[in-house]
Amino acid sequence: MSDPLRPRASLRTAVVWEVLREALERRVKAVGREALDVLDTGGGTGKFAVPLARLGHRVTVVDPSPNALFALERRAAEAGVVDRVHAVQGDTAGLFDVVERAEYDIVLYHGVLEYVDDPAESLRNATAALRPSGELSLLAAGLGGAVLARALAGHFSEAHQALTGPDGRWGEGDPVPRRFTADQLSELVRASGLTVGSVHGVRIFSDLVPGVLVDTEPGASEALLRLEAAAAQSPAFHAVATQLHVLAQRGAD
Image (cartoon, rainbow, N blue to C red; front, top):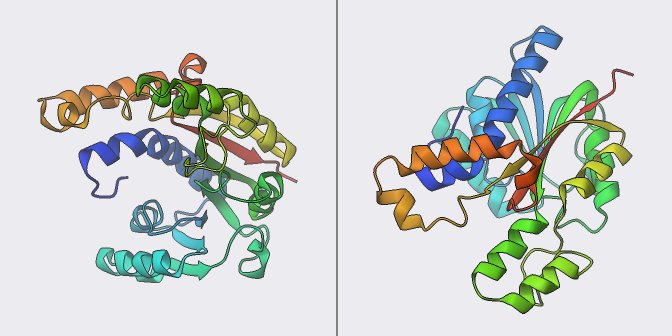
């Protein structure tokens, strides 16, 4: 279940794909049909949507950028899945202006929580789009990874600012509006009415290892991938992950 990505990009998404694969398999068995209805909020150019459509699932992508949606449609056409990918311009604040409530088996909420004005409201909307027993895949920026990266780069004041500031930002030039700890994400997820199933650290090592090593050293990419997978579930490494992934389930109602 992977898009044809560059090796380093694959390292950065492999953990999420593995968790999603298991969630999809569970949901297929639960509902008794092979094709699931998936909502990808902020899905952009289709990094996840197109591979999911290639598996036979129906994917609706909601994104505020018309340029991203144009690229998504082109990508879907190249993959031969135009009939299974539906692109809609919008955002999670007005989600139900463009999609229906309780219509999706899986909701992807990747790279959204950092940027919305009201994270709690946005997450509640994503939750309300799920069918009973549906699952939400949440991927957001991790606080510890940013602190570690700034410190290793010698920017100690910025690392301190990220660590102690209210939003996990390292300064005025930080392009990410907010970052989260695993506990903060889990609390937001529970407050939206979901049950946390698992938490994984993503990009624990891959953002710190020199790219030239991964791309040129024989076997390095595969070894790093195994290391990332082994560390992903360990709470000790959640604290230094660049991103955090939470899989959560809506109640049966």
